Amino acid sequence: MKTAKLTAMLQGQTCIARKVFEAVPIQEAWTASQIKNALHNNEASGADLHVIRGCLRELKESGLIREPENGLFRRNEIKTAIDHHKEIPMTRTTSLKSVDAPEVQKTSLERMSELSAHLKTLGESFNTALQSIATQLEDVALSIEQEREHNSVNLDKLKQLQSLLKSLSLGE
Image (cartoon, rainbow, N blue to C red; front, side, top):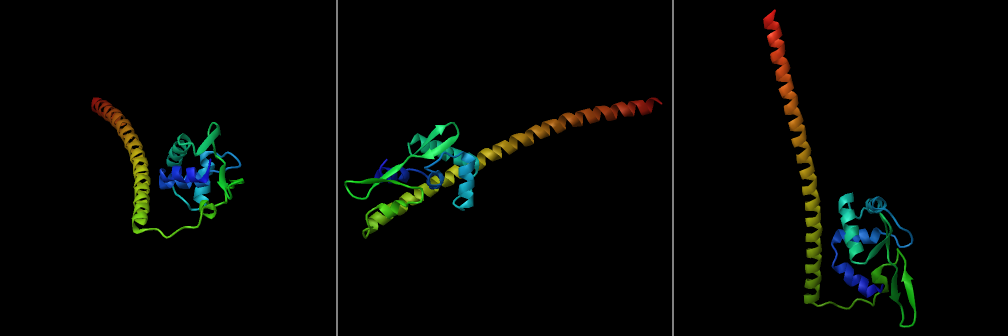
């Protein structure tokens, strides 16, 4: 994959997905847990494993990473053109900006467009985080409802026991 294509594909991803992409190694395949630990160690993201797995699924579907074995993820090699005759593979530490042409002065409209795209990705990552929290809240609500039902059954048994004890004590 060429750098220009990679950059264009990454623009369509959320902020968290881009961070997850940067944490996925090229040389070896990692599990979602290893990627999560790398993100936390680099303080790049505090996203939970559920969100990271979702990002990995999206990155895989878009062709940015691959899954050579079930549950193991690896970035595709990126080739950057230094000159028109020779291409070199980009390593994990090579920055995308270090190979691109020098940045030219951007117009206000271009800067507004970039800021708009950045705001959109922030909104998408915020939405992903909110969906994750909502799912967790639903799980907690279900467990509370199960506990309440269990307590209700136990309360009924306790009332039966109390009435039985009362009837036994009255019978004496």
